[in-house]
Length: 202
Image 1 (tube, rainbow, N blue to C red):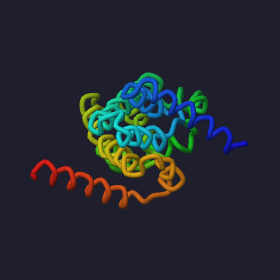
Image 2: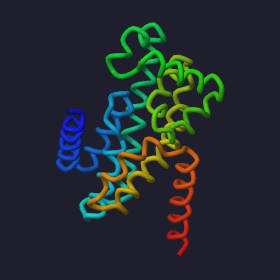
Image 3: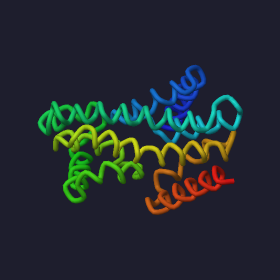
C-alpha cells in the first residue's frame, strides 16, 4: 500500500516537472521547504535526469531548486514569526511539524545560533524545519535569506548532479540518501565544487 502511494507520488511529481521544467522544480522545492512532505530526493535528481536527457541545463535546474527552496523557507520563517510556538504546537501537525521535530530544530538553533540556518540545509530531516525556530527567534530576515540560499545551493547542486550522473536510473538515490552521513554530504559537495572550479579554470 505504501509502495503504491510512493509510486503514485513519484508519477505526479515527475509529470509536474515534465510539464513545467524549471518552474516545476522550483515549485516542488518551495512546497517541500514549506514543510509539506514532497521529497527533494525525487525532485532534484529527476531534474538532473532531465539535464542528462538534454531537456534542461544543469545550472538553471540547480538554481531553480535553490530559489524554490529559499522561497518556501521564507514562508516557513513567517509562519514561525507570526504564529510563534503556540500556533506551531497547535496546528503544526497539519503540515508535518510535530512537537518533537520543532523541539529538535529549536535545540539546534539555540546551540549553534544563526549559522544553523546555513549548515542544517545539508541535513535531510532538519533542513526543512529550521526555518520555523528562526522565525520564532525573529532572526534578521536578510541574513536568514542569505544563509538559506547559500546552504540550499550545495544540496541542489549535489542532488541535481547525482541525478545527471545516474540518468534514467535517477530513482536509485532515494532509498539511501535519507540515511547518508552529513560529513559524506559535505565531502561530496566539496568535490562537486572542486570539479566545477577545475572546469572553469581549464
